[in-house]
Length: 358
Image (cartoon, rainbow, N blue to C red; front, side, top):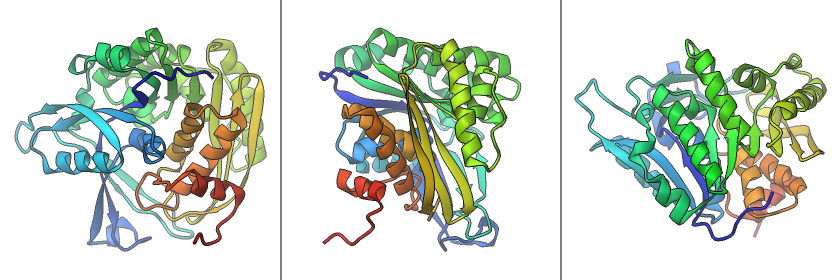
């Protein structure tokens, strides 16, 4: 996958920023906790963190509540992650007006799985609109190597659905590669199935990279496929291969398809693998055990590492290896996103080298 060199931004991500509240006592459930940590978060910036921490220029398109201390926390956080950002400032409109999304989540422990409660009423990110951004400047004058879209933003509201579609259309005309993580959520799609199927299908038809599991491809794009395979990793691998064979017939312009393979042994031990089809070549990483501090963001870390490998113009085999390792790295952080110190740290994870570095 060849990328141009004279672009200002390596990665562009539209997102709805919010906060995550997590029990301060690591591993404790939400309902029995009274002290919480607060962090800025979004799935799309989780992805972009791999590139930004490793020195590539990243830009975030988002929306803010004007004068909000949460908005200030988010801006400070993005700057600390080496991310540039643009976003319209929207008046709160009083206590019952706009706000940034809230995710209340614990990490689980042992045999007790994590629980996540999403509170997204009045979310300012649902107002994202192309008219609030100068796409001629961003894609034309500055230039973007990869636009990464997520189905979470694509299905958040009617406005964000069209926002993502227009971004993809503009990217296509400017020789920007498009990455699309389908990220199906039933609660987002309820009552909008026909509309979203049409929009997601158009975005997928012009995407260069598609990420998703069998359920994502079936429910977002209507591609017939096998059952997910349950806990059987080997069955999941074969099912994904069969599914992608069908998907390629409908989306021949896409050159990369990928997904993670995960089996949960306990909240703190997963079997972690990945599979990717690049052109006509399959790359499969058989699942192997990883230790998990907090699982949230592992899949985003995988996508971020995969895109980083593409941006660095590595051989495709290294894309998925690096993505596997950055996904595993993300599960060792209490933030939703990995913060790689350097490429060596990531490659040591891939090699299974956890020896002390002095």
